[in-house]
Amino acid sequence: MIFYKGLLAGQEVSRKRKHLSTEKISAKADKVSTPVATLFWKEWKLFMRTPVYAMNGLAGMVMVPFLMFMPFITRGEEMKEILLYTRQPEYLMLTTLGGAAVALFTSSINIVACTSISREGRTFWISKIIPAPAKQQVTAKLLHSMAISCLGILVTVTALGMVFKLSLLRLLVIFVLCLLGNLLLNALNLLIDLLRPKLKWNDPQEAVKQNLNGLFSILFTFAALAVFAVLTVLLVKAGISEWLIYAILGLVMGLLAIPSAASLYAMAGAQYKKIEI
Image (cartoon, rainbow, N blue to C red; front, side):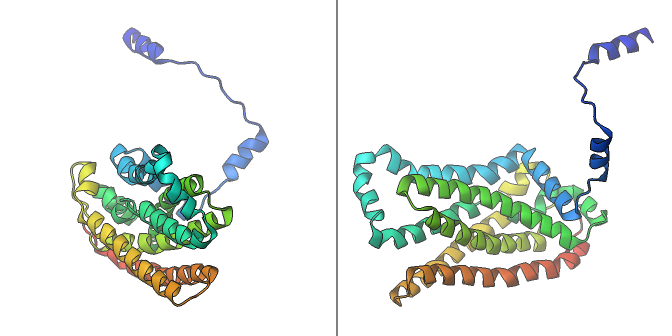
């Protein structure tokens, strides 16, 4: 008894307690969250608390824009002429479209969506028994991957604004186009992981670095960029006005994202029941 009391006394710490009023207690007790929001924060916390997932999901989106724009910063005199050309009114459309392509690429090369289910590993049985439909769980995973992609877009858009001095309106166009493109790519990548998850692994690195879904994600990203590049060239050659080109690209991305998300939701329930650990 003496030893146990001494042990507990050595572990005691004093902290400043916060007194809550009746109104605050009632507000906290009455506060509820939707299942999708709860699942979203679960995805976020599990992702951020595992260094391998966080590094592979975030490092590329931060480092790639930095490395791409470093020459414009370190070699100021050599790049000054190029920057002058990109800031001319007749080249602003090409700069905006090129910036959108770079932002879409950098924000898409992450392992978040394509390993969303694989990262659960042998704990996937919990997702099968919790009182939340598969569609809600997939929605939370899609929102989580979109949140990570938005961080990548913001980093690249900020770099574009600093280097090329683009207006806020053009930066907003780049952000919206990349947001629609990421919705399409994240839905496809999540669908890939839903169809062929890698749940049997002993180390978290296996779920992301030894997962072929990451390769398929990169291939889909390059294929999408190629399709959008060809479409952009055709629109420019057709003599369509600049802002109409942006609208058409956004419309195409949005229309392609609809069947991708619909397929994801249509297969979610059946695949969650089918997947065995």
